[in-house]
Length: 146
Image 1: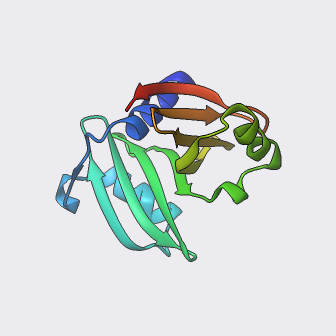
Image 2: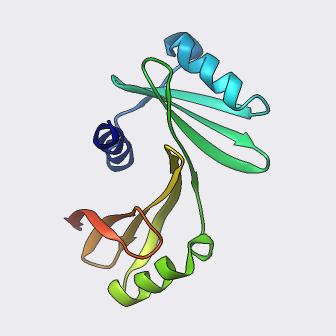
């Protein structure tokens, strides 16, 4: 199950296959789960794909995203962060392992009670998507030439 969740999240990060949806396209179970978990959310925008629903919203001064299964189960909650918000070991690992790259995207995910980080870095020739399941190292998910 964990591998399936990670696959769904990786696909959501690496592809832009979702489409904007109106609330009639969203599972009532997903909307109910959202309402019970994020009752104070504002500016909610839903997206849907064949396999999941995503809600972007404001909560407590932050912009968050929640990913739901078709059944309505909450899969993950994410937010974009600054590199200075990473654990120190991950900050150091970026400079050590990826000199000459800049961060173009960085997100923190809460999945099954664990915190994970996904980062896209670039240089003039490459774009690399990495992930971290702990607070020490980055693992490459995908590398593409520019």
